[in-house]
Image (cartoon, rainbow, N blue to C red; front, side):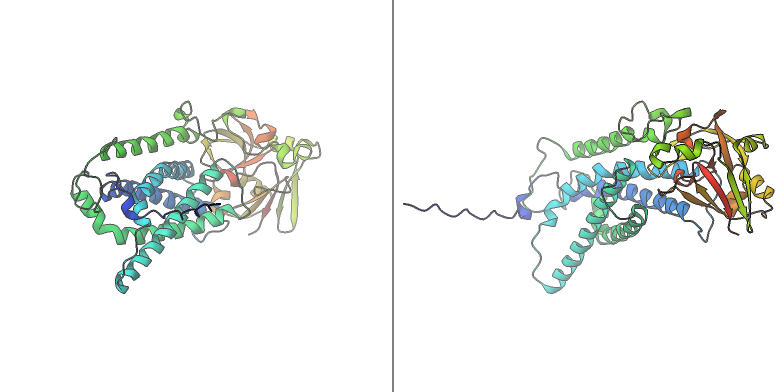
Length: 393
């Protein structure tokens, strides 16, 4: 009986196996520039978001313009979304270089190794940032680490490796932009001499179109007039008063406590506590402010809120101007169960303990009986179902 020959080992692809005319530095450089722009925008706006959520930053987060966080966080999510097709196409164009044989000389081998390490870190951190960011936008958390802290830390790794990559590749990028996109001077030996089914300009136009479609499909969460075409937007603007809801009262277990006749708002200062019924809060002088609510997932909505200015409540308790306050919710779990109000927020007359939305009493899911609303502040910090205001200094 004749024995079957053992299977031949699978051949590892080599750089020379990829001959497409499209895998050229001329294409890679042009896509890379726009990928760098989107990553730069996402990084800067991400740092702003992290600053806005820091409990007591050394530099207070501003209260004006009131729409500032709405814009920066919208840009953050939109630029991150646009980066996805750009990154995929760029990785496709440079893949042959990732499997290139290392040089033999020690100096060239060292440079090659350092470049590969920087590229590996850049690719890994970029994929992590985009994948985790998109999952966060969809409020899907298939991990056990703290998203904000990890996302922020990896952002610095990504931007650092990106700067190293730019420094290494800058001569190639400059040469690519100095010549026409069809120029073959920088192409690898053995590449096809001309276009096949798709030209380089066609690939670039397709990439720009894909990025544009990705933006239009998601930007409606931030830009209201795009909501009819943003089929992938995680929040469409539906909800009581046209303001979306992330977490309901039932999810947070506050239905009974928020609707109880025994509800009291407690203002604590200097060892003393002053409590108010909902009727007493409604009887106080009210203020109205048009303030957007903007969440870290990228969605936002404009709204008109009516309620008692927080600084008036603190003054009634005898607290000094520009006090720092902890706002505590009736909910006993969840990351939104409390937030910090810095002195510039407590002093701003637009910072309200809101009782109404668009002139109507708050719905239970929007924070009834009262919620915090303040200008230029992430939605995660606009505490709902407020039970206590504690003056800390």
